[in-house]
Image 1 (cartoon, helix red, strand yellow):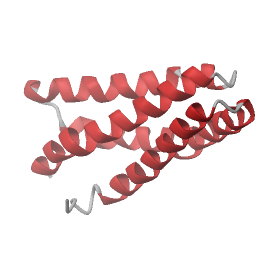
Image 2 (cartoon, one colour):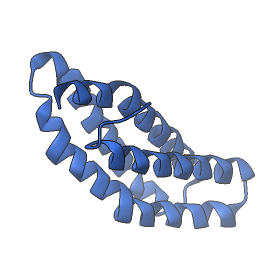
Image 3 (spheres, helix red, strand yellow):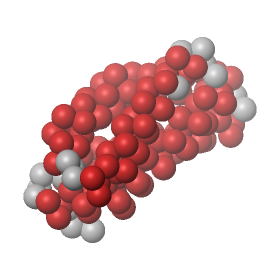
Image 4 (cartoon, one colour):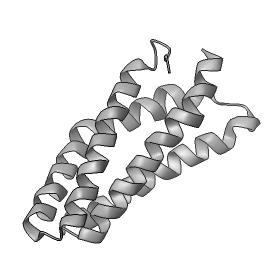
Length: 126
């Protein structure tokens, strides 16, 4: 799907996030404690360096475009997803395999939601 030039950088970042989600899934399925610990640390770094700045751009630049009541559920879902992913970080700091699996699944679902539901609405407003 061809994205608006405004959204293209965020869509590219979504691809990177999906790759990270897949890494989480593989580490969790491996049952290898060292791999889980390494992956948890990788996710924490990626969150700080890539995901949190990405969330900030969305929250500060994109979501304000969706002011109408009919778009309120999209804003609420986006913010709730961001908060859920932030909340999982504490468990990742403890190298929790279950949290790593949850993070990967949540991140993947969130990216797909934004690409399939949120971004098309935003593009219609640009």
